[in-house]
Length: 296
Image 1 (spheres, one colour):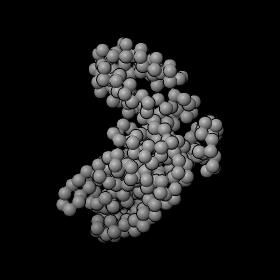
Image 2: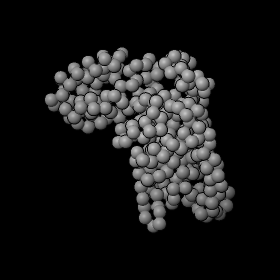
Image 3: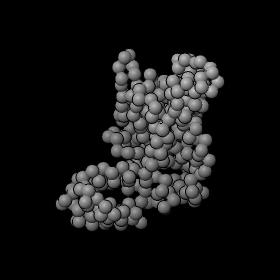
Image 4: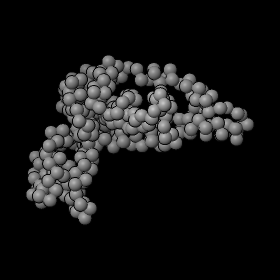
């Protein structure tokens, strides 16, 4: 029953399935009570100790509707995913709270630190206002990498459809550049070509260059890990797959319960390390030394 629930079946669907297969009549309320048996497991998972260092941490949130005191409210599920020093993905935290704010993320980051996460080399995030300040307040040594894919999408909003293919092709020279200096030269060339027609598409990159350019100092193996938040967006797609049958959740607890069960199923499939992880770790140790080695 819990397995069916974890794969996105509603309590009503589970009721019908049990009746059809076994002739057992269980109310949807009873199914919900049975799945509530995993709540202590959820709490234990949410407060478990973490590794002292994660080289890469990705943060994002996904929005749902939850019923509270007769009202339907918007809730954000804050998701934090890390890459361990062994090169494996690890879901560090899922917390349901008010709509996405930097204040809430600050509380989340402090919670990670209280659970034993002492250092992060790179936070890979989208463009939430106040994100940078929240990260710097808790992990001042960490670098921030804005998601290049999000930056491109934001720029494309300002580009006419007939120019989009050529514009996006030109921009590849920026984020595929071998060095930051070469990338800046390519950005200047694009500004000369497109700047008058699409000034906001270019200024978006200039304004956020400090946070989007961190990955240029590294090899392709490291760049592939950190330049985009696709890793956590892929996780969010898995969450949406199991929550799509529920337009409104009866409570925050019900939402957290289902996301936890979905996380368990996703994590079982994460059996492979990142490609060329030994070389990645060797480079990070050369660059960051004791920030990593003291915890190995």
